[in-house]
Image (cartoon, rainbow over all chains, first blue to last red; front, side, top):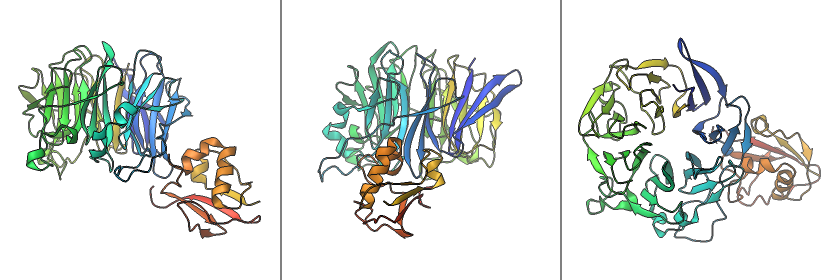
Length: 361
Length: 89
């Protein structure tokens, strides 16, 4: 049973905790501030919350007491940009989009950012180092914004069995793999295809737009993904991908895979791509139990008329039990399920737009 | 020395009362303020040391002209106000 349901929203961090009567709001932190990403480090239990202040930039806070108090730690910072007219992207942190454990030690962290830098901290966010092996790749100059104005790393998927093996997803910069803890990177993602590129470049790996990549904890060779043009699944550690027929639409942002069973995955589809609302204004979750060959469309407890909720890429999470899930929408609705999605329950219909959901413990 | 005033929107994150700072330009005054309160730097300046897009600086009630290098001069009796812009909120 998850012990916290954490919601990073446009107006703060909302901490729900389980009670006999269901999830109850325990605390609101950073009220008024956009909270873009959350992490609970499983090695020491410390919480991290990234915020994107409209005026004052990206900030990172850490809590050693489950959100009772917070201290500001360093946000990743880019080095001084050299004079280079061919590099059109600024070297200034604009968004912290991904935050995940790195290595094996407590406080060893990855941060994925816009404008496309991957950062590493080995001291719990006290300091950060830009991963130059990726940043200095010549392909980086081709990346462009997708979802944000600048290219951004939104997915960081370490292999729990071998944390030196990491898959990352970039919008728009494709799928990159490292087998040596970030010392070198390989561009993969074969099988993905983009209709926002000229036809002859549709399968060009470096400009694919994976929307979100998630990894099965118990079977880490299997990853599931959303993409600007399709939904995909990989069984070889993110190197190659197979498109999935997700009903009622193959477009979406949110995807989850059961941590216990790599054959079980969930999508929250939407109309591609200039609309980005539920198909026929009916909010549904598509679930597969057979590795994406067949999907059930789950509707029970979800609004089936006049629903215009969009679920962002980090706003769906599944707990360690593989049965408890939660997702939040741009409309400020949050739903939970305890039966893997057979039935959903509205937690709150009046929250700010939801950016990130984490089920903890 | 000029006096620096920070808006409440900044002070909500970094407490910093009005204070005199050395410097004959806005850049020097901001630098001195950030040297005194290092955490303030990331709130006012970006990674490249540029004034953040949605931060506004006024000297004696007039917006600074040189947002890029902050070369506007300041005198010993000047009042520098640092606000959040109405954009970016």
